[in-house]
Length: 277
Image (cartoon, rainbow, N blue to C red; front, side):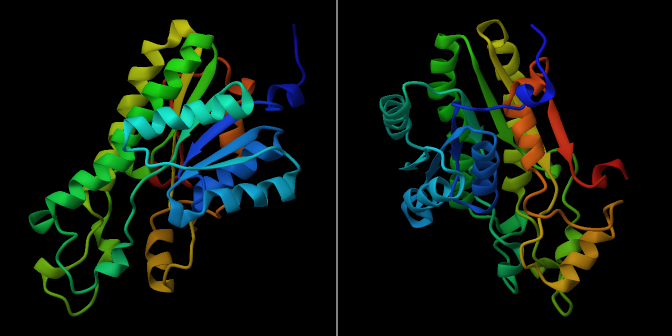
């Protein structure tokens, strides 16, 4: 049966679990889901107050929303999350693996911890635990439920740094010797690149189970960075600017809805053209 465009993008009644859902982009993903009629489940740590953010979504969009305090690096907590979602909504339709550690490089001024030679093992393990192991566990638990129901969507939030290397010149600070210059940590690139690999694996693994799996690779989002940093980064982008925080909403709805029904295993790069140069 042929459907019109509005129906293709309609998420009415679909339950979307969003990890890191109370954060900057995670909450915007939830807004996009809610605006399309979906039912967002914000999953985050207690300090991010996912329950409070869920109440805000309810008030703004008039949809049912749920906030769940969950450590996605713990398999038992992810299983409990699924149980809670099924008890509340009776189904789960969408998983957005958005959670990640992303320390601000500018906070490393005069420090050497961000550099590869001194990067602490405990930070490597923590970053991979949240960004990669957490995505694996959520996909394993929630994706298996979708596969059992023979319908669902998984969306992994990668980064432009999954397809290009970080340009460490962006973070240089005058007056510091080379061995003290801050850099984008190795773990961010490793995690985001690995998420694209996970996307392809899951897309082919569950293709016959009705579960589509794609990734999105956003470029840098303006969030109060210094003028110098914004100028440097904008010079590397054909559109000559960083992204606004709400500029990924359309892609989120597209990839989570039937509008992308013949799309799986793809990494959609939205970076203002940066990776084209």
